[in-house]
Image (cartoon, rainbow, N blue to C red; front, side, top):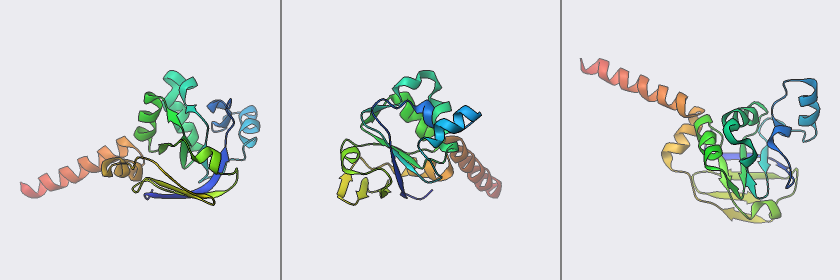
Length: 162
């Protein structure tokens, strides 16, 4: 993943539960997922606080969003556990209180994680940019793949020193 994400917006309603967009595991799940017509690379935008109803299942919910092809989620705020799980699994979660009202469902937008900006037809919104180390975690596909890359690099450096 690069620090730039471009994709189609899927707007969720205020009472949309995240379970309704989890990756399909049964015919009923497929029907619910098709309600939103999620395609790989889509960006979910939700109003208000997102991820609170998940509780201890935040890692499963994040994995399911990734399995469904979601490239990023934009909402006013996220629970701490849900936000941490997003980073750990390589899914950017962006806190912004302007995008939902400014963006239309199906519109293509551009998110710059390094600059902290969302560009859409009506203008631009700013959010706190992600630090370089978090961008590297996203690029690696999550915290564990990132840690493995560092371990391999460290092992290779040590083998040359001996």
